[in-house]
Length: 591
Image (cartoon, rainbow, N blue to C red; front, side, top):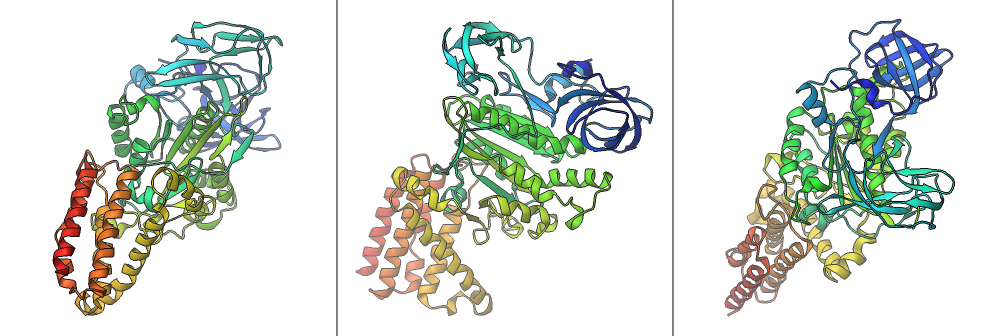
């Protein structure tokens, strides 16, 4: 069995108090000399906990494990450290719980059920890594500067950076194979650098400057990339009721977005959903490298039956890992599924602390906590040689009954600039992803327009604007159709309904489980859009100028072949053929 003392690398204080009161995961100790957010060991089983309030001689602690069976009078020891994570080679491919305990290691030791008080280091301290020095003796270095690298996985280079707060001249540095806690570099000040760092999860890692967003996070999902793009370093929310497809959308984003590193946090989700993630991800092929996607992924699994305090810590653990890779100069995408479960954990702990409840029982500081989390996203100039790196945060929200007016959704909307609203009615009609195009929005469109104009097409923004206008007009017409039927509409409006149908079926809908349609490059989306709007342009001209009847336009067959491009590898050839066929059909009509 792995003993709890393995987790404590350095005990800075021997302060010991005694348990006085126990209320679920919240306990009170007396006689303990501690600071806010100090890590403590509770009871004879040395359960891990964190100080969250200090009143006179009472220290209130949230415990990250089940507290049943512990009794007042048991000892509480202060470690003098804050809740921190180990940062270094070995993070990628790992699967952790909310406080960075490696689940595969725990499972090997004790099976499918984790015993209380049992912990293991976040990284493997016995494995040797091939360190390649990029600096030499006599070089001046400062905090955040890269001094070497390690080939962590087949296609990923792990940069070793000078820990924050250190600077000086290199006295000696050596290439070779080292364990993560062995010294690889020594400065003239006597400070030594290892392959591993520790960082408190509730403290954001510093940077030089935050940059304005200018590059999209390409997701391969048409509805996101075309209508509601997200910038690298941005923040997005995916709210939706039960069964609307939040988890599948998050998994699609994790699989296909063009970030260098993926951090996936399953925060309070059902066990069967996390099981699917944990079994599927290690088998997925990486479309960028051809290797395994898991080689640039870290999974954090904290299911709904795990202790709520660890669930509350899991998102901080995830974003700290993301910031560490950002400081190496990488673009990182973190998916939090779901922030509602995180907020529910805060609500439960707040109620046990007997704090004054806010709206719907959530703590009054809910908005502050959400803002603090999402503010850790951003494209930044890092410390050291001022590399660019980014953290993009995508949080799922699970409002009860799909009510977007509830506090978690509303407070999330205030701090995120992209809103992907899932609609239960679309999901019931088997329209996936069930993003409601009328209520969703992105505030990054203006900032990203130059990138799309340069890299995809100069008329990208104008085409997407036209399509959204058609969809909005369709929504107005459908109210009339429900009363009098589509045949009673003027022919031009009937054409609008037909073009909107093509947009919905061929652009907005996407099959996540189809080998080809699961990912759609922006260029492919653009060509599909271009073909649909070309049909709309020719049809409108035939209707208004040539006097062609609407029934003849609706009977044309070439337009329905546009959707075949979604499932075709050689989509360019197919769409050229379809466009040629559309032109021929309209020429035949004009004759």
